[in-house]
Image (cartoon, rainbow over all chains, first blue to last red; front, top):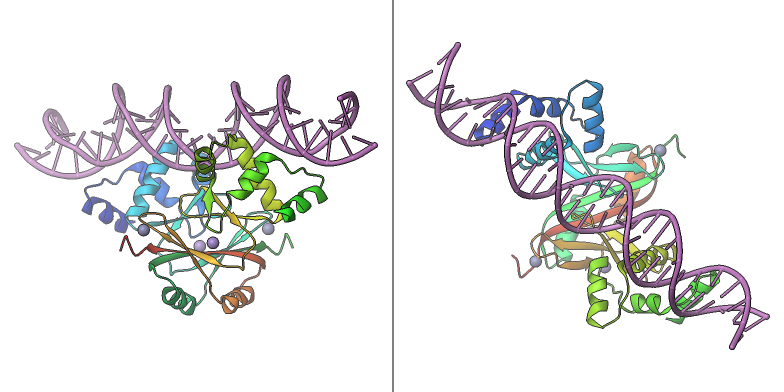
Length: 133
Length: 133
DNA sequence: GGTATTATTGCAATTGAGTTGCAATAAGTC
DNA sequence: GACTTATTGCAACTCAATTGCAATAATACC
Ligand SMILES: [Mn+2]
Ligand SMILES: [Mn+2]
Ligand SMILES: [Zn+2]
Ligand SMILES: [Zn+2]
């Protein structure tokens, strides 16, 4: 928590109540803006969606949050303080599971086979969770 | 070309001028609806965007076209008559390069490490093309 | 503490991709 | 050619995300 205050003020940004509340409602599971908004509403915290968008965009820039999008194209956000990992998404109910993979070999192969200077990659898996199987 | 007429009529669909023109403007490089629309305009072929959307959705269902989305969230479409492959996208200019990788090992590892019944995956690489390097 | 400065917020309006309803049009069939 | 019905184009709409701007609140300075 102090960590993010540091990160903010070091860039001339301010630690505000909305930013604190949004940060407190982030998770290691990716969430959409709508989901974060709902969580805040349940806690009787009134924050406009625009503020959530702007805050998350800023958190991404500061490396506090990671943004991804799956098949449905809407952005989802999760805390960035975890080791590099990927997700398995249920085609039926949308449930998300983390998955750790050793993809070094694959990335190395990609770098070798491509004329591009490869910097990053997206990798997600889709299927059915236990309940939906 | 006859191929797609078969596929269409076998499902009770019709081969129309718009569908022919849209098919003729598909490529092995992923294109957005806007890009396809522009190509058609340059050829003085007047087809509404809605028709392009509906046609592509149908082509996807028939297995003629593959739909993907990269970082910018808009859908892109490419011909499906090619072997399974992935893409490298330039972060600067959007150029796309095909890349073939042997990901069997990775997919097997994912299936092993996950509680889900994995059916498919998305894998894309990002970086800088030669020009933008 | 109180005041000045300026980052931040909330609201309303806007953008842009994609979808839907429906009447007019054009394939396929006989 | 006439009939049936899939398809098209237009307009209206949805929904995530962005933008402009005046009101508000966090920091800095006294
Ligand atoms: Mn995760
Ligand atoms: Mn390709
Ligand atoms: Zn499920
Ligand atoms: Zn480039």
